[in-house]
Image 1 (tube, rainbow, N blue to C red):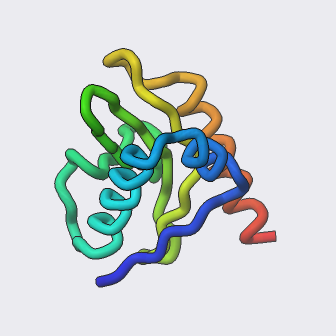
Image 2: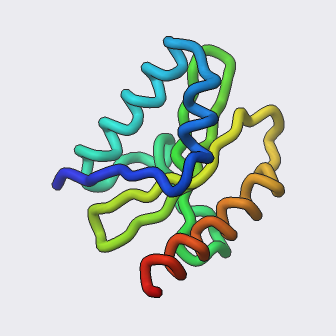
Length: 112
């Protein structure tokens, strides 16, 4: 079961470009796991409760934690929205709100 990862707009790409080489490698490694493993552990991919299909990809590198918001489309397609570096235990409220808005835009455009 190979999944395909796509980017909606440039929010994730802009975030990715701002990371150093080792962080980029760890993000890409996590993407490869998500693409290949049918049901990966929540350590890497977790549904965000109460969000109607929004997930977060979880990447840890050294003492840094990164979250990438995404959703599934047509089963094997992973659509990436925005990302941030996590600095506290709380869910990043602005990032989550932005991801929900982007998800809605994505499906509105797709179904237009």
